[in-house]
Image (cartoon, rainbow, N blue to C red; front, top):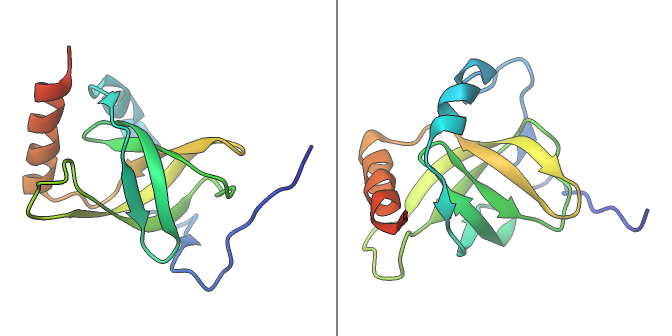
Length: 128
């Protein structure tokens, strides 16, 4: 099977199975309906390091990862939509699904309304 990588517990990454801060699975249909666009960019998982993203929606993103996060793991993300953006978006994210050794789909938990609108506008400008 090859080597498996695990995060050290000293990072500010944790799983809260009984108290998720993110939207419930009932919102999955809404998230699937969210327009997704390619978003190939380096982002910061706070306390863990930089990772590359593959796509973005107002509900979340897909992140390439070497380490295997568990479904339900929550962490803080920081990223800019473009290098010229004056402000980074900082949001709590939760792993929804995993492709081991490849990446994970994450949902945004506490995206502010202004940041959501900024992402929505960016997506509208970059979708076909």
